[in-house]
Image (cartoon, rainbow, N blue to C red; front, side, top):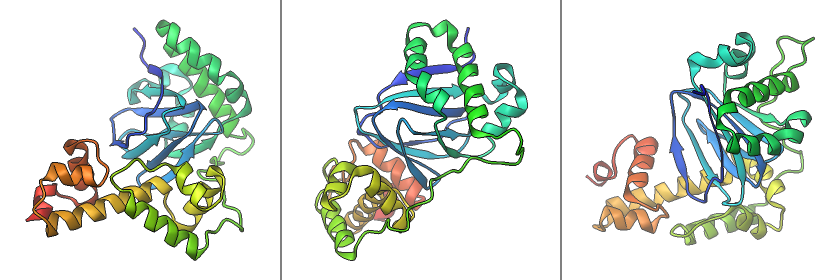
Length: 261
C-alpha cells in the first residue's frame, strides 16, 4: 500500500479553508488557483507551486479549469521517500516556489501516470520531491532558501480610482462569484499583472480581499438585521451555512450566532 496520497484534480470556484496534519505539495499543470497560507498568498500556475507544512492553515479558490497535482505526505514518512534532510528542508516553512524547468517538463506526464497507476504513487512522489529539491537549492550554497514570492515590479501599482472601482464592484457583487479575471478587466490589466500589483499594494491576494469584504458585510448584517444566518451566508456569497460559520470562527473567533448577540 502506498505511503503517499497523490491525486490529480480540478480545484473548483468554491472557497475552501482548512489545515491538516500532513505535509502537502501543490503542482499545477494548467489553469490558476488563488492560494493563501496563514494570510500570505500567491497564484498557483504552471510556473508557481507551493509547499504547505503540516498544521498550517490555508485557503484556496480554483478557476474550475485547472489541472492540479496534490501530494499528501505523512510527516513520519518523508525519510522513506527521499533523503531525510532534503525532505525536512523542503517542508521547514511554507513556500511558494518557482517550478524548476525539469519538473515543469514532466509534470503533466507524472500527473497522468499518478491517475492510472496508484501503485506507483510513492515512486512518483519521490521523483517529484528529489527533482524539486535539486531545482530549488544550489548545492554550493547550503543556506540558500528559494524565494517565497516574486518581488513586484516598481511599476506595479493600481491607481486610486482603480482601487475605488474595485471596492465598489466587490461590494455590489458579494452574493455572486467574483473572479480575478473580472477584477483585472476592470483595471484594464492582464490577470497576472493585476494579481501582482494588487498583492504588492495591499499585502493580500485579490480573493483574500474579497473574503475579507464578505465577512465584514456579514458581521454588519448579523448585528443590524434579524435575517436568518443561512440567508446572510447566501447574501455574502457563501454556498452553505457550514462554510460561513467556519469562516466567521477563523476571522472573528466566534460563531455567527455569537456575533449577533
